[in-house]
Length: 145
Image (cartoon, rainbow, N blue to C red; front, side, top):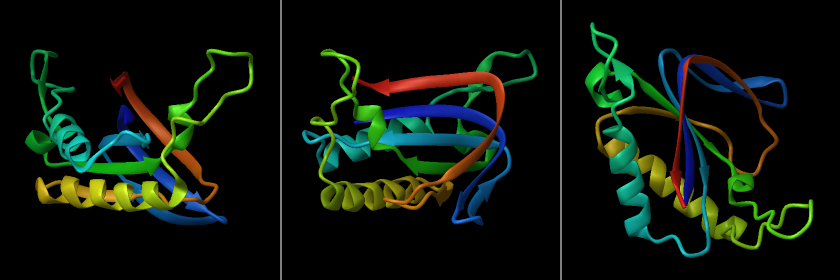
């Protein structure tokens, strides 16, 4: 599993010209699911993300997590994070989980995040999405191998 965590002031997702999800201050997660991922991988990644201290205190030190500031998460399925470009210039997605299995894992990931007491919005699995981010910082963290 690979996740790109981005701190934002606001973000939204459109599918076919219609806004399907939006948040104010919080984080956007682009999530790539790989064949070797398990239910434990989902739980561990969700735990890590909700406790990731990427929000500043009064002294501008990264002290607070998304749970501490009581803001939202927007989670976007993103199989291209699983790209392998070791050979040539065209990405290979052989590490990516199958679409059917990845959709189940993505929905499970959303449920685990919500179970941690965080408000979660999501993109639409398998759809082309127009994603608008107002990045704060920038603060971008890459998680996973």
